[in-house]
Image (cartoon, rainbow, N blue to C red; front, side, top):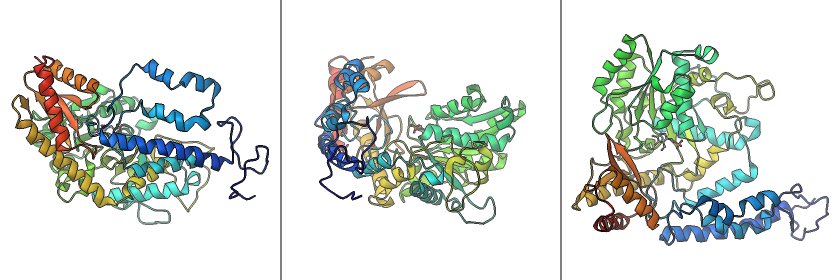
Length: 508
Ligand SMILES: Cc1ncc(COP(=O)(O)O)c(C=O)c1O
């Protein structure tokens, strides 16, 4: 069979490597030829989309009623009758018109990475090969990449290398990790390992009422969710002592943990932010890790957003102390610029993973293989994308130094933005940014007024901001992820806020 034959168009040719029926007929060639032809049209549209987004030419968020969008996309009709195959190139234009443009300079709302365009091609490779690599035989290449990415992250955290197949070094002499679909699932996984360390009986018996997670109120909501999912109950999350900026006060932490013990409960984990979602501020990991060592507590660092500081010679000290933590979460789909989703759960001692998961699935686990490693024993997921490819595709374009430059560059913009905002009368910046996140407010407006400003900017189509409450006061919030955002973008936002205020929209 000649797969290279360019004239292979015969519909009934049995040797034609076509897809099964019902996959977007009619077709004009082999499955591969169809992909190349339709794919070229889609890539063409995406190229235009990207250039328009980077120029800020279109609305950053095209808000319209959901039912209207679904009708435009002919979604119900397509589900019933199909037919998207040949028309995908044209249809994708209407889909792109309904997307939130993360590459747009005015996109400053959420902590979602803006992937370097070429790294998106890894998604295409994953989509075609569809290797669910959690067991080695279902994606040897993806598994090898995942181990390599984990190895690199562990090294950057200052921990041991992971165990590759054939490594007979003593148990516990290795650190370990797994990539998973998002920071929320990563936090759950890390806290599951903490639960196994504190209460090995929990997997079998459940019903734990004496375990407590000590976390700052500023910790991501997935921490409280994890406590509920793990059977501790959201009320098992005890507030770590914090200052007005919601950063942990390490010297008061031992007292809170002692209080937990005094009432007969056990500290399952202490959670620290690196950095906090709302403020972008880092907790003092060094002092928190020392307190955990002294008390014998699991120290979990949620570095979903900010662990990328580990790559930056200028800002690495923000993560100082992580080398003494028990677990670290690090999202590649945030500051490492991988496409969604790709998050790492890293444990300083590989044995903690062994204790975390117990499973019995005769169709998957029967015998051992020595060539590879089955990540399935470390993850909530069974079928899992080739996330190693996702992370590598982002990192390998220009190497880790380029990602460090990106992190430093966005943090430098945040510092300049804070200075620009402070220099304008009527605005307040509550604290110096410690990352690429900036909080500020228009002082003449109350909490609802800040939200009204954000909503007006969003509906104007030029700028997408978020908003967060810190200590009861609501702020506008910039998460400076898009490389296209500049000082001019910030100045433009401030001009618009002033005009909105003058028009009476942003009053207290
Ligand atoms: C500190 C922190 N942890 C966890 C998460 C959750 O990550 P994900 O959105 O990937 O589930 C976020 C999300 O912004 C975060 O900022």
